[in-house]
Image 1 (cartoon, rainbow, N blue to C red):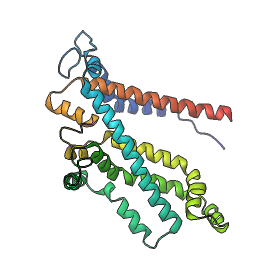
Image 2: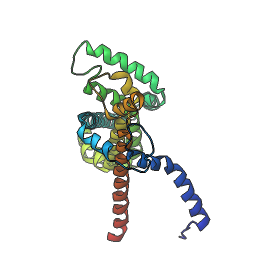
Image 3: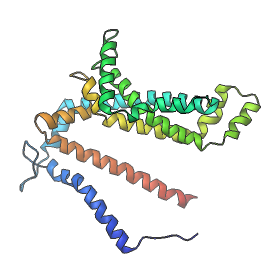
Image 4: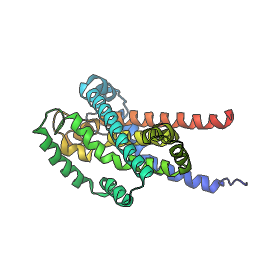
Length: 269
């Protein structure tokens, strides 16, 4: 089968487009080294004061740990809900499958402000029942994030199930396997990559969620995106630029490791 390689003009055009898209990210790097207390380009002098602020100020570390905790709990809960729903729809094929799937995907199409207001009233009502989960609690934020990420996890798992040969499940059913045995021993092992992808995407969406978080938190559950938003809104803290550079480097490192692993697989095979 012939392979098509892009010509020099195509490569040049792609490089220019990539450079244009990356320019805002590259502009953050020099700003993070400014000695000024405001967001500004450094004028002849570079400083690491804002990187030190990320380590010395406990608010940054607390918000990062809180975002990780919320992301892990939200990801696990939303992936479990999406997996149970997707398995039920795929295995039993109810009559109103399209209606059920549309209902689950509703938070994906509803405007975020509507979802945020709805979750605000829900969590404030739950606050009267228990102080563990409710308004301005990390469990309440994790529950709200799960509501927003379940549709995305459901789509990924349904896509993984659509690529699975249904005859495998029918064979297990014909041999007398129970529903639990079919789900845990046959179906889930064959879609584990889709489940992991759904969990990872749910964590990323929870990590960067800010719209709903602004409505359901106040002073106790300050996640990293909320703290960054407060820094930009109140005093334009240049430490946000330093944190952005660190997050960019982490993303580039993850992508580089992933590309290296993909390049090594054909060589091994």
